[in-house]
Image 1 (cartoon, each protein chain N blue to C red):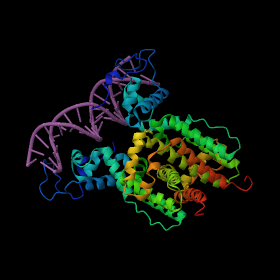
Image 2: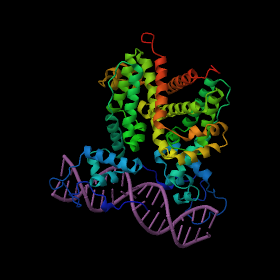
Image 3: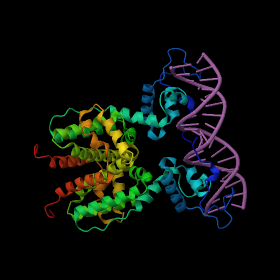
Image 4: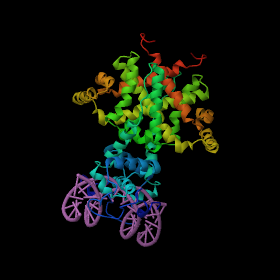
Length: 239
Length: 239
DNA sequence: ACCTGAACACCGTTCAAGT
DNA sequence: ACCTGAACACCGTTCAAGT
């Protein structure tokens, strides 16, 4: 059905594309983990995470799928590395000492980075990445909380709440795209009608608000609420 | 490599398993959407969501994979229906009028249901299910918030925060399993050592708390914090 | 050191042919 | 009405053979 013929999906450089065996002639684009990662992100970004396969990534590079195994440990590992790479690209804001502002800044930096490749967001938010890349934001949040005089133990609890809220919010934001149809008036109206006729009294009463979704505003609302919570628990020393 | 031979994975009833063509003889287990759903959930629960394929579900039923297409619209649709089914099985607690308690009860009911099939949890929490099943918990939360005199608009915002927190929490809980190694002392110690040597000052300071994860307690903490937030915003009429 | 051919055991899905 | 055979275009991955 709707698939792309193999022959017309060749590498960007358009050279050394003849099927060959053994080491490439000379200046052919050398395969590397770096190149593979970029190709994978490219595929995800243009065709969605579902269409990432060893073969599609290889095609992007004008190379055979099996060659990738010389540089990554398999598909699962590749996806892990992609997630790490995206997360590692996040730039952590400098703390200013104002607890609320600092947490807000981290939240927005995190969101900005994960939404930079919306198609990859689910990957980044869902995979359990135990590497260093995943720890940098954790360190940032903990630092701010410790600076606010929370005990390490409470800081960890608050961190977990903070992260859960962050992930839940962004995940929905990413998934809501398809369902909420961006924000065109017609889509909202249609959705509103469905909700109104759901037969659920409170849902239909609130249909007009449920039908629309301003992701930016919604994110701010949730994050601010969570931060207000944190501030309310500030130890006496700082409050 | 590690796969199960086709011939020894036969249906529970163990009858009418010979390859045949056309309508089954007489009392053979009739295929139905119901049966397919149960088989799918069974596969997910025993082998994980990754191993659900049209063929594995069919094998569970002692039937050809293509036969499933007479009852479901394809794999994606099947997964949607599974998610809906799981969510639909949630029993919504009766509201008592105490806002905080009622929200807490809904949160726990939601968690209990999604964790009933831990392997399916990601599916339920991640898929965008626009059906009726997804709306029942929404109605429940909105009802409680409206009963507390929040405006429909604010109720929707609070609902979204609530759900994001819920989903983020449970998702992590489900994913943390593999990483945190349940809670055996040795796994915790190893993880703690890694965190301590991370080179990130605040992370290593809090390593002992980061290394362990009591999911029940953590969930309660987060949910209580979120609910405290809601209560703090109660309109004057109720506060 | 790094690439590919051949090969294997899978996938989802369509469609016509069977009962 | 509902099932399967044949078929198609895919998958991930191993391993030996090539340069």
